[in-house]
Length: 217
Image (cartoon, rainbow, N blue to C red; front, side, top):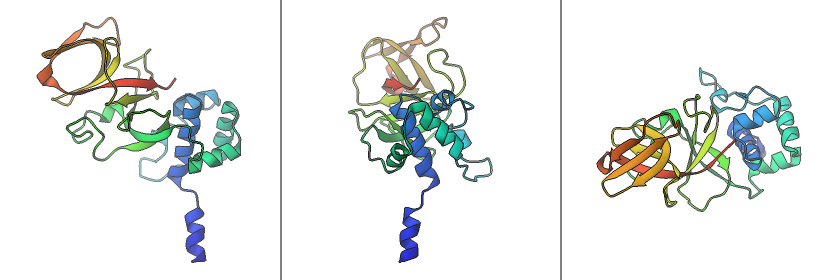
């Protein structure tokens, strides 16, 4: 019984990384943004660095955690509370890399997270309980969104002209753009790169559309 109780109090790999995610979210940053502010390599806290190619768990160093706390002005006591999620600042939502969003089974028919590949990240509290997050990879969406940025997507939030949205087609393509016009027959989108031509989709081509309500910096 004593051994079991001790085991239950041991910190896990996921707890430490989620606490770092929560620390970043409290400061309005993505994990890469927190690393930059702390004077670390921008990829130090990225999800791709948390498990080695051969499947071994990689833990953050005490030095990197100390620098992250110094960068946000938080104490080790705050970090301990973030591990247990006692702060009430935000909540964990499902997270998936944008590159995987178009894969089969990543979402159900209504556009909600489904299947494998999803992890969790702590982000600002929102009213929509179905909110999920996507992590940007690469600079194809720069300067609006950069590598390592996290966007919060809310399927339950009303969409208006001018909103940035995520659209998934029935063919499996995932697009991030600005909504220009929506009718019963079509969807008109403006790519984030203003130099690109507007795109019109027939309603029948759209599997789902959801509004982007927040993005890390």
